[in-house]
Image (cartoon, rainbow, N blue to C red; front, side, top):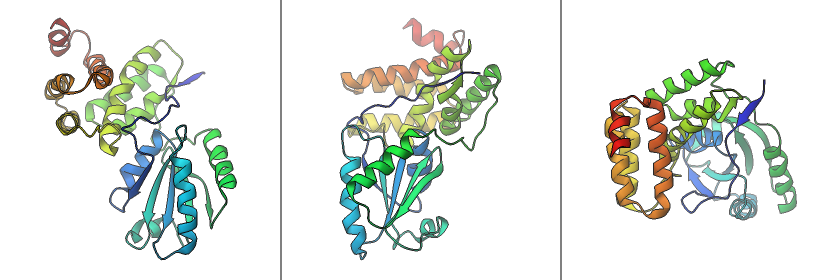
Length: 261
């Protein structure tokens, strides 16, 4: 059976981060969940560590390149010892690359830029590991599973089901639903946030409404976001709304109401 992967490699938008600081509390969303969308390299470091200060700029420069295929997450092991213990950090700097919620490769110590680039190229070009959340191989059942996750407000599980979908008659619907799953993840990890406070607040409120299985409120907030956002934001919002209409179905009263207006 052929499978489609709908996740596209692209340059980072202005809203997407290249380097971020993570903590014990934010690690799950910023590293594990984010790694379903894009590879995440975690730099376990500390301020007192001389080699860490040598390696850090090398990693940051690579992450900040326009066509960088990964996001760099920096975790200060002095202040976030729970994650350091969980991942068995005994010496630093320690670097681990995550994809689909799993560590796919790692190294310790200082490497020159050329070897770090080779490490990145090797890890991102290899097939991604299987996701922890496994859905059905049957397209009809897989689509229903994805819809169920979306209705529960679980964007991560829905994304894993939709982003790699069996080639089938249901593929078109999977593509149409994907922006909704992506929106839930983007708001949670900050990739959707624009710096325009009124728009970002509407995004966060809409995402909360989706998590609470309240599509009526979510659509009202997204419609307001269309008027608040700039022209560049409108295709993104429109895709999310269209995905929500697809989830609800063409005969749902909300779908009819918005598409008639």
